[in-house]
Length: 200
Length: 307
Image: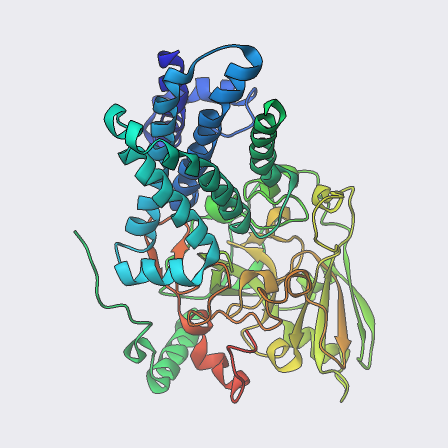
């Protein structure tokens, strides 16, 4: 199971490496990706046109889906009688890892480490404030995720629900229009939360 | 670590003084007066046009033709290039009507053959925060409007995109809040401005469907959504026209939509932009760098109110 989580969590990085190495791949590697491309709904053989947006979207999506995975361990135990709770921390930390990349792209590349710029954006743009709020929650959770500290801060980790909701709002607000695709995140989160209500 | 403390908008020293600007224009006109026939492409026909020289670094053709905002095809940037393979830009007519002396319907072939075409290398700034530099081929919109004959009631110009869900899969979507067909509009002085063009090509070739074939508007000092694609109708009106994004979210997209780094979109900053093909951002210029030519159109207007 540990291996499955590591493998899944590192896929976005593998995907980014494939996209960024398009121009230096040997012919046969590229051809095999062209072949694989027919069966998957995303491109493998094109250098990202807007690299910063590509990395921001990829890290943000990865952080959310790994957070959703983190929230899935409880319903899996309750409904499928499968206790994998001991792997939850790993999934949560991977989610934070991508959230960290996501936030650093914003602070470091988008705002070029300009602290006034970052605070200005957070204070004036609600969608950035929501994202930053979620990041701060996840940061505190990651810092208190060691065995020793988790005992002390156990109840604080309930904040994951707030973070998840903030992320969905942050995601929807960052788009010009709301489409079915964009609704997927919200749908999955609602599903995960409803599952919790059912059993209680 | 790079912690910059100087957080200032564009300094006035970056703005080209008018005298130097005029000098540059004269030089440009002098060096650019060579008619050029571009190399033919298997994709679309080459156009004959007057070439322009520019110091701007062009966004590569494969990026211009593969990264598009064209919701009639798809909300995904890479969707329009893929979903537009069977789009038919011929036969095509543009109807000019409303408050004009001579309402008329023009055939695209006649437009391309009869009107002298010229290259215009313009910056394009999307309201989403990315930018490109594109060598358009087209002609001033003013020449078309003059030919139709303006009247004292021709105060605004409204444009309409083709409505054809069979060709535009994005127009079929029942979920989504875009009232197709897409409309955009300009005030008459903006429409008659020499920088405002109707483009029929880019990079020397006819427009591809994903770029708005066969004819589209280009208003370089406004956010990209004003530059409406695949136009079938141009209507002169007495009152302010429709503007689709303005109708969808009036607090976010104004009728004027002039590029303005000082006025943020309510959800994101407009101070900087990502130039497609580059990783780091650069400062956005007031009126997208065309302030010397167009700022006078908005004299006395509060651009925070009329964003």
